[in-house]
Length: 248
Image 1 (cartoon, rainbow, N blue to C red):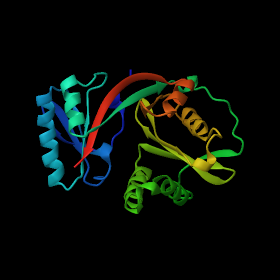
Image 2: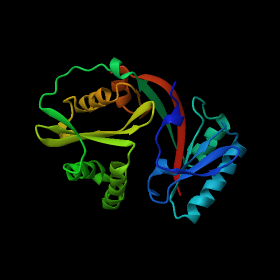
Image 3: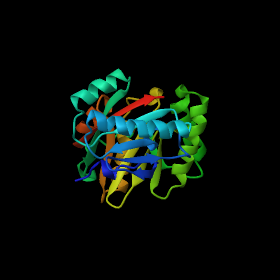
Image 4: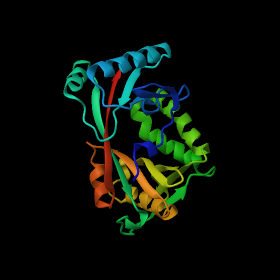
């Protein structure tokens, strides 16, 4: 069975402590899920505060403006820790890990003018413009920083980027992180003006065709609507984990 250990992340292991592992990236310092602590235990309040002090000192010394922690999979936050997190204004979320055998993906083949292509040198500029449209609500600085990340993934050997065209117009995209046994779908996006046309499903179907010998996996926010779509498509939830974050 797959687990959160199979999930791609852009951070590198910085420190391995008794109760946690610290991952970070100086290149992608702006990316919250590339700079975080993965707790190895479900911590007591004292144990969490020790990890918190460590990360706060590190982040401030490296001019980073957030602290993020992942708890161990399939464990709930202890009551006194939860109270403390709310008192300290942490944002608390829950991720859900889904998997599917590509042959079990439920999909009706009605493309209606939708064409999916692999991102190459020929259409990389269109792909970047599409990502700009997704990112622009976060400001120009974020757009430019994230452009570096998109370019990094484009050149990575373990990553595939797909773009969907709606009657020739770039309308949606996703990327796939490829491992020996898994293909992880990430960053599924469709422009608002092109939604309700099944574009996200068509993009996923392309992944299923290309990686039919892999276990296809993805991570969804427990509060997001897409997780209901994934279940209807045949995905099975296999795990969950809590994440907590706040800005410094």
